[in-house]
Image (cartoon, rainbow, N blue to C red; front, side):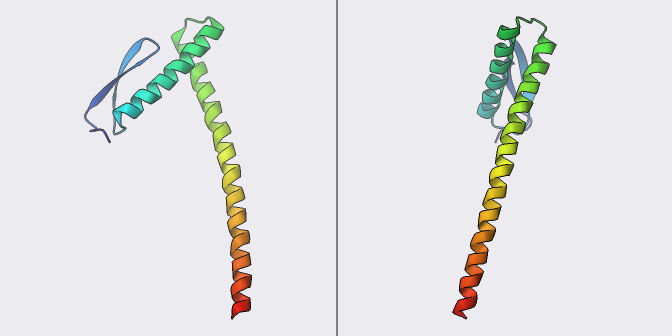
Length: 99
């Protein structure tokens, strides 16, 4: 974990940013490269040079990815919870017969 007073330099879409926080500097670089890649991909497809517009579109794209993954996670968590409940019921039945 990084020192909260330490600023980490990252580059996103040809702009330097100094980020302070407790995240690992290498992880921050990974995040910055991801955001940079999204912005570059959107800029290349839209031929838009307005950095703010590209950043907003990248944020929407990342938010969409997040919500799709969260939806999948929630569905899997629900399935796991259901299976655990079923296993618990079977175990309870088995233990009731053993008594």
